[in-house]
Amino acid sequence: MARSVLVTGGAGFIGSQVCKRLAAAGIVPVAYDTLEKGHDWAVKWGPLERGDIGDATMLADVLRRHACDAVIHLAGYIEVGESMRDPERYRHNNVTKSRTLIETAEAHGVAHFVFSSTCAVYGTPRTRLLAETHPFGPVSVYGETKLAVEEMLRAPGRRLRAIALRYFNAAGADPDGEVGEAHDPESHLMPLAIDALLGVGRPLTIYGDDYDTPDGTGVRDFVHVADLADAHVRALDYLAAGGSAPALNLGSGHGYSVRQLIDATARIAGQRVPHSVGPRRPGDAGLLVADTTLVRHELGWTPTYDLDAQIAHALRWRRSMPR
Ligand SMILES: NC(=O)c1ccc[n+]([C@@H]2O[C@H](COP(=O)([O-])OP(=O)(O)OC[C@H]3O[C@@H](n4cnc5c(N)ncnc54)[C@H](O)[C@@H]3O)[C@@H](O)[C@H]2O)c1
Image (cartoon, rainbow, N blue to C red):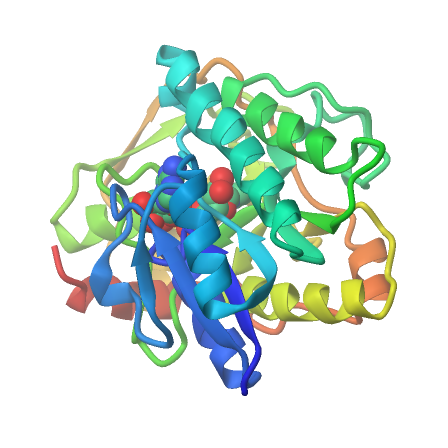
């Protein structure tokens, strides 16, 4: 019988790609999702169990029925701005319910746990590249909720073995065009730039062009969603082989400014991206780029898709995606 892994948030942008990658590795991905933000059309590579990670009874039933021996936990709310406006909702969904998931998984013999964390757990960058040892200090409630779950997983006495993967900016779309990003409302830079170009979204606002960066706009580290998905399968193997790093950065190690992203998008599409410059947003850092030394060493992982490929895949997806 093929091995099964529970993928919470499996109907979302990154979760659906993780499911595809797991299936390619011969593992049955059991997508567990409320569908509050995800889509049933994105669950194509295994069963969909519609449920909440805060529901211990349903979780226990699903873990037992599918005999899942590992959990990949991507479910959660993801918007930084919303987390500042409604912190309790974020803490409840991302932290309290994650505790229920972790404890239920542990009670049902789940051995390995991979958690979707974020570079938002780090404090204001003190170095050009952010390594896993950089001091914590999230400036948003969203980042704080992710750090709280990381700490829960590292608490003494945990029986399951866990790893937190700290994503930088997830981007692109499935290279075969089968699934992609479909958030409503969308808050991520690449899809917003593409939607502005396609005329289905508002002109893009650049939040600040007076940062201490080469062109004054913020610099971010974009990583292709298919490369992210690949790292999750490697993380499962890593835990099974006794790997013990508690957290790894998932980024490309290269930074691109907002202006560079706009220019590259326009070049690839052969069309201008309508945009304007607005003031900085509170809590935004000028430069967020990963030091990827540790993940390359521990998982043998290296991103394979560059920024142009990410834009090309995202562009194709957004031209055809269900809206
Ligand atoms: N997209 C990024 O750039 C990025 C960066 C860093 C970290 N992350 C993390 O990666 C994960 C996935 O992000 P995404 O972009 O795919 O988001 P997404 O919104 O597309 O997917 C999240 C999924 O979780 C589901 N969900 C939310 N709360 C749930 C609950 N209580 N029970 C069950 N399902 C629930 C939603 O319905 C949705 O399908 C999130 O945890 C996010 O914080 C994303």
